[in-house]
Image 1: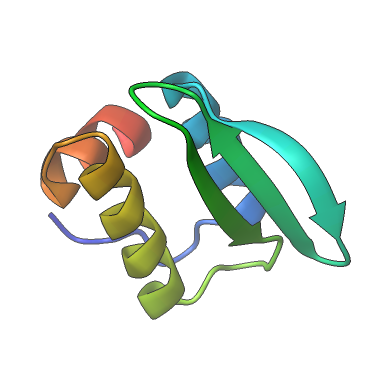
Image 2 (image 1 turned 90 degrees about the horizontal axis):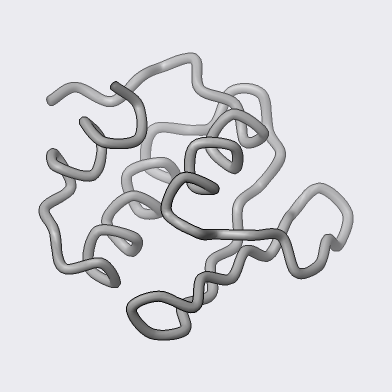
Length: 80
């Protein structure tokens, strides 16, 4: 599945909230998200507009690995 080219950091944070991620702190234009399920996982998302493709791919790969699913499954669940 192709990654969206116009996704912003704020939109990604809202999408990750569906999986239980919540903002724990913010430093400048970067937000630290934490999810407690299935185990505690931390993630930093930049509030850039739009996110770079490599950054988005790395974030989705880390989330998919933490939730034991493929990146395509995660992308379909989050971004539709």
